[in-house]
Length: 439
Image 1 (cartoon, helix red, strand yellow):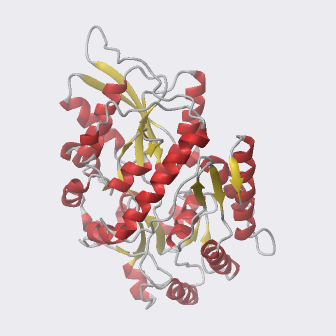
Image 2 (cartoon, rainbow, N blue to C red; image 1 turned 120 degrees about the vertical axis):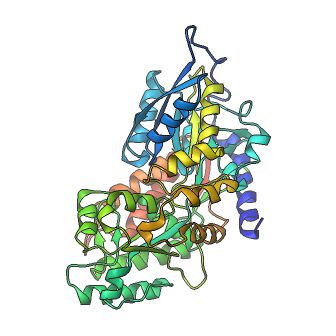
Image 3 (cartoon, rainbow, N blue to C red; image 1 turned 60 degrees about the horizontal axis):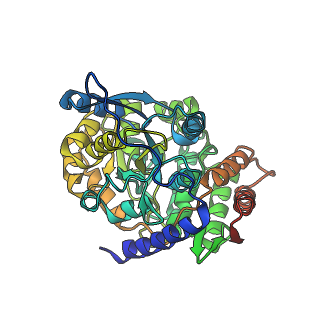
C-alpha cells in the first residue's frame, strides 16, 4: 500500500473513532431479522442513480431465484436524492437499500438513518475491496455500507478541437489558464471548461487535490478549516478564471451545459472516473473525438476524489441479509461489474481492485479513440492526497456553499465568500448538535 493511502487510512480511523463519541448514533444495529416472503423469493427495494443501475438489477434478478430486487431511479444525491431518502426514512417507508456517496455517509449514520451491516458484510468480504474505501464506510468500528467504487479526478477534452485551436493539453493549473485564454482567443464563444455553481463537491475535490483538509477530528473535538492556504489558492484561482471570463458557469448536467458540449462551445470537462461513461452516454454523436488526461496539478501529480458510491441498508429494513447480498453482488462479482459497465453508460472504477481488469475489458473505449482510460484512473487513484476526511455535516456545508455559489457575480459575492459561509454554517450546526468545535 502506498504511503498516501496509509496516511488516508490513519486519518479515517481517527475520524471513525471520533464519530462514535461525537455523532450520537441513534440507530446502531437497527432493523430486525430478515423476513422471507411466504410464497416466493425475498423481495427488496433499491433506490439509486448511478449509471447502469437498472441493467445491474435486471441481471441480478435474472440470475437469482432467492432474491428479487425492485429498483427506483432517484435524482443524484445533491440534486434531491438525499432529501428523498431522508424523508422516506422519517416517514417509515424507506427502501431496503440506498446509494450514498462516501462524503454523505457520516451524516446519514449520525442521523440514525442506517443500520450496521457488519454481521453480514464480513472481514472476508471487506478484504476484496480497496482498504481506503472500506475505511470510508467504517465509523466507530462498525460497517455501515458496501463500497462500490473510487472516483479519482480526470480531465476530459475534445482532442479534435484542441488540435484545431492548437492548444496543448495542460498539465498544470498555470498551463490550464494559458490554454483557457488561447481557446477564448481562438473562438470568442468557446471555453475550455465549466464552473459548476450547483456542485460544491467538484470544488471540494479540487481543494482536496491541492492539499486542503477541511475536517479533522482530534480527541473529542472537530477542527474545521476551510481558509487554509490550499483552499484559498484554489478559490482565488477559480475566481480569477470566472472574473476573466475564461470558463463557462452552468449547472452540472443541465441542458445549458449539455448543449454547450454538443455544439462545441465547451471543449473540456473537469470530472472524475465515472465521467467517462457520462460523456459517452450523453454525446454518442461525438464518438472518437474525446480523450482523457490527468487533472491539471499545482506542480506535482495529485488527485482528489469526486464522489464515490456505497450501498447502505436503511434502519427499518427487515431484509438486511438479502440487501447486503445484492449490494455485494453489485460491488464484488465479475457478473455485477460486467452488467453495469456493459450498459455503455458507466465507467465505474471498482473498489474491488481485482475487478478493474474486468471493467476495462467490458468498457468500450472507442469513444476515447481506444485510449486505456483505466490505466489513467489507476495512476490518478494512486496520487489521491491522504489527508482529506469528511465530517458529519456535509449536507449543511454543501447546501450553504451551493446557495452562495449560485449568487456569484462579478463585483459581487466571491467563491471565498461562499466557502467562508459554508465554514460558518458547519461550525454552527456542529455546535447545535452539542459537539466541540474549533475553527
